[in-house]
Length: 345
Image (cartoon, rainbow, N blue to C red; front, side, top):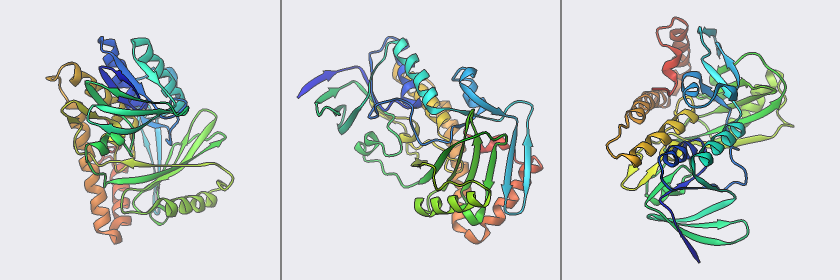
């Protein structure tokens, strides 16, 4: 078996892995990124990201749509949140992935696609390509950016208990409103959404751990959508698990970013911004062990607040509908700002 040596090995070419790779390569480090998929950027994702989080990390030209209004529906209420600047934007994950990959390669990183990591043993991995070729790669730093089912995380014996399904359909057509549906009958204490893109729109749902399983969520989503004139039976469904079980990101010379670290929001499922910020933070910490990790600590603090809301809803399901109505009322009165639900620090 061939053995390859590199300085920093990053498993996963999502936003977190690519952000980490670019910053390290810009600072003269030898970086190798391995990605199991043939193409970069494809992921189950509604494509929604907070404007404040996005604008600082990618060029505005990549944004498909920006929304100054957010329409929030519950069983009993409908409110509109308005801001001077866009609150949420939508972006195509493939477009974002390609751009981030180009930036990383231009900085000097190497990316290998269509290759699967089958084993992680300390700072050594076994990599297989689709041509059944295999090789071992050793490194001085290993970064796990390989998503909710991270093999790097499992190699560290870190469990994942707080995880929930997200289901989305990308439908051809145009919609003008960005909608959030806190429909307790359909989604429990999860939520559904309609996120307009440039020529398509995402319609989907997310459910935290303990609320409902993926099959029940999908069935409820299809029924709920049909009641609103969306026929999803002939559309392609995509589903993924969202990991919000954070238990640390630094383990000597092994690191976790994004969903692998469990940095998504358990309340909203937002993951792109935490992935990018954690990827950049890890890169800075590799370059300088004394570098600040305040950005990750800020996201974790907000995640913990979101998790308390989930636990309260799970502990008192009979009152979860009431809790949602109270939350929406507080949003309407601006006692609770909409941005407090976001993962931006």
